[in-house]
Image (cartoon, rainbow, N blue to C red; front, side, top):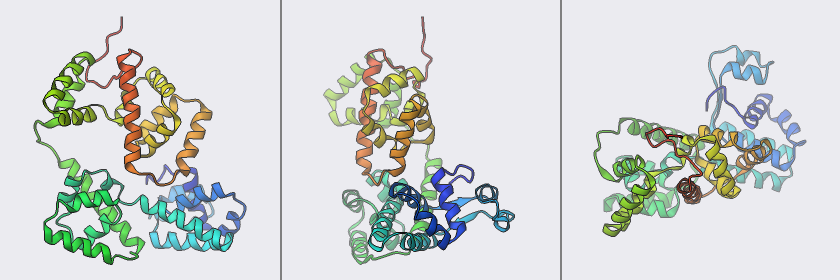
Length: 338
């Protein structure tokens, strides 16, 4: 998390940590359930801030603010703090229910980068890890994705990993966080080194993205006659949700009029901050405020549902492009206006 880009709930969470459990509990007593959920969701995540940021949030915390080390609140400390203040501020059963819900959302945030890899790629990536590490990672994925990954392993490793998954109980949150951060770092390094690959459906998709829509359609139709599956994969790769960053503002406004809010909310769950800002810029202040609130309180959702929502929006964008109502300006050549 960037030190100077803390959201309101994140600043409030850090502030409460600095105040201590007793004072934090008294403050939480005066919040409504929605506010507590937002605050708790921020508390359950990894929080770090530079001394300068801490000073701006809590000016009196001079000793911490004068050091050059950032504040880092480990997972176990965060969880214990959260549980204690909830128990002090709320009734027993209500505190426990809310705490468990926030814990579930926190666990969903683990291994997000892993969830986005296709099973074959992920299997090749983790097959040389210790079987216990593999078991921990796979236990945080849905059963369908886990099954597809295990099918890629040799039989001895399949048995070993499944046995270890069956024996898993509670794992210390700090260990989970460490495994997650290590794997994310390795995936990022792998992505940065990837290169030199020639051909493939990705190359075809990139080539077709440079063509006019009419020619693109003719070529894809011909490919469908030869191999439907390959044509579908090329269509999927040709225009991805993040490419909407390249859409001009007028086109974006036209697109937003055609899509429903539920699809938009789901689609933005995994999108970049840059794309979110692009979309917010083309909405009314009230609509932006409501959408941001929905995103903040949204619980875990299936990645498949997010992808379906993104594909629905992409389909609408392509339809508007064909009607001349939307300009996809990211196709490598400038549009000519007369």
